[in-house]
Image (cartoon, rainbow, N blue to C red; front, side, top):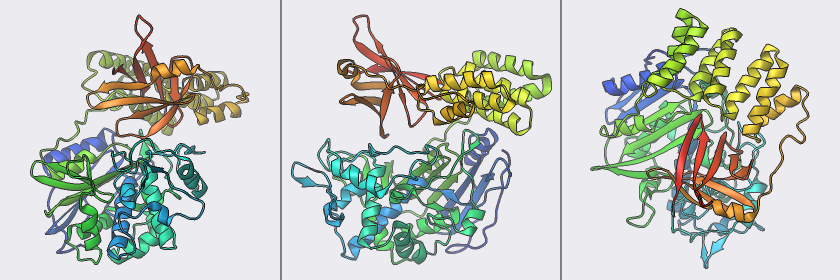
Length: 572
């Protein structure tokens, strides 16, 4: 998100030459399992120390072409971009062109006014360490294409949100991870230098460090080496960040990223090293958690201090980090949206656990169908789910991937059966019904395709693909999705915090007639009513059902997502 380890000798080396160190056995096994079980499509791990670099490549760039990934494969690094933005700020500070305490208002164009609170202004450092009291995402973020959500967010929208936002907490008082704030910082830095963000990135970081294959726009060589993004075993679109480029627009490969880490660690001599050192220093008050530099996050595990950041876009996940004051750094790049943080942390701090990889139920069922036929495979699925639910990786994505494998093989009988099984196994999944509808439509079964798409829209009225397919099938969707008005007293009764797991809560808030949901350390999103107690999100396929006790008081909710129903108790 299979198959073999693809060793690759680097065409060049950093520092003292390429080290030939092997991955510890438990990491090698874990990475191979991720590929074999379809968790990741491809993974490249790069490790740097005083002796040089070594690379370990697993899997492929694309499930269609089967071309192996290697250290030169290009990945979207997502939010690791933020550390580049932090270093750009640090460099400006050391050149005495800015100070960390400068109000951002000093760098905004005429007619744009940053919000203030209690006489205090947002400073550049607040954008860099996520304490500006700005939300993770702006409320006017409404992508035309959810598969490439940042592409159409404009400079006008950036300014309009800033002009009209009211800060809900004191500036600097609390950490709240913000893509908007870091995107704004990148934009401000570019304005101050009278160039766009990518030109600034090239002038101050990538060209001086010799990062020839790191940037935003894909060069011909980068495009040739691009590892295509995947989600749930399916290829997805690349993301294009324009206005908010400083938050997550960069693409790179393992070779360049290890050069970048080497410069941060002082192993590669660079004029940028003082700026990099400044970016590594905790910029928050002593004792405040988490510790954040300028873009970088700082974690202390035992006696080890790790400077790190991760990243993720629609079809990619990434990790970059190093031991501060030590000589080990690691980058992990994957063209799947499955988390890889545990790999990087385990390499830097072996006591940190690796994610347990379970065998995929899809692989087991595929074997059963191959050996004993479709009916036996479906029966076996039911048996294993009832008897060995904890021994296999069950999930909507597993069956979805298996069904698409059969589509690619041209076996529509098996594909339709598995898509249908997914709707039975995950009856609250809009995506499951959407994929089943698409398969039925492809197979020429118009009536059942319409029925499945209608069910998909019923579960998630904001599902644009299902609406498009219905229109293509001649269904009038004009009045299919209707906004529902609820009394504000009903909405207010849902406001509060709901604990789904230790240290993980959903917070429901209200602005007038709009309810909003925010998960721990995640962005805030509006939710929309389908009924008096059932709401849905437009940004992801997820629904919320609120529950009442015998006295009619709201005492909990259930989150329906990815085929799971997760209850949460309302906290008093």
